[in-house]
Image (cartoon, rainbow, N blue to C red; front, side, top):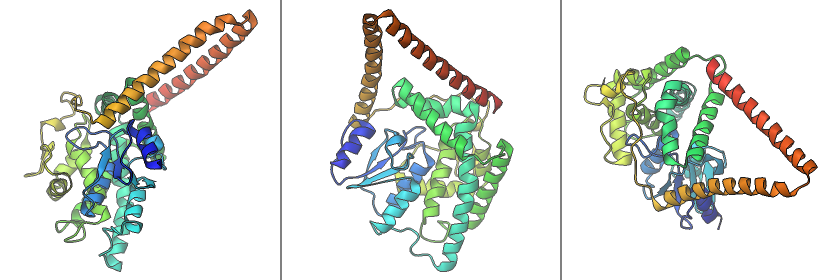
Length: 345
């Protein structure tokens, strides 16, 4: 079936037909996934009363209908992105966290959603993927450790490219930090009860929870947004409470929820933390094994081509060599341009 084929493509092993499966980026830092939007999708499902679902941490966003994660498989339905998951749960499953809000609260929700997406989410992606020290020390190694070397490197590069594309034109690290801080302050002021709009969670609570958990748990060497959150203890308390409701027992965060202070891991000069080795599920092990065989297959095919090419006439051989040289020059030029762009940043 289509569901089984998707399972094969994502993780190397099929999922049961009809299963509710959340596809996400790899776990790390004590969190079930490193992706804020994937954490938010977890919260949508848990708070929506759909706690019985499978997760696939293969991290292959290319298979998602929107080329982004999270993605949700629900029987024959397959949707991508956090908004796609939220829309599907509302329209197909009848699980709408915002259904209880009145018209005035809905208008507020829309405004806060726009603020969060434009300012906080953009600042988060920049901190995780565009800060060179953070990328090299923490976020890139997560993907390299979770997959075969080239596959992990390529996935990390794809995430960084997406963050670079989404960064507003003319934005600087300082302006993104200021805008992210402004959004956090506004959300903190709105949070007067257990949730942003009262006694029940909304889709915005899910988004905020995903954002906060990544900041509270990710050991970035350069992390000024975590310092901002540490000064807003009601946001820290919200994150701890939401994490307990959606994920059960998690390790202690880097920011202490009791007094809103940052722990030793907050220092920009502290040791760089490598992601811990973890036990993979059979599906993830199958995906890794498939990746290795894929790389071996490329090497074998390249070697076979080189050997067989000697059977051609000298003219054919020279032609092939010219084509290979041209391709290599193009690739080298492209890599040099990317390196120059990174140096400029």
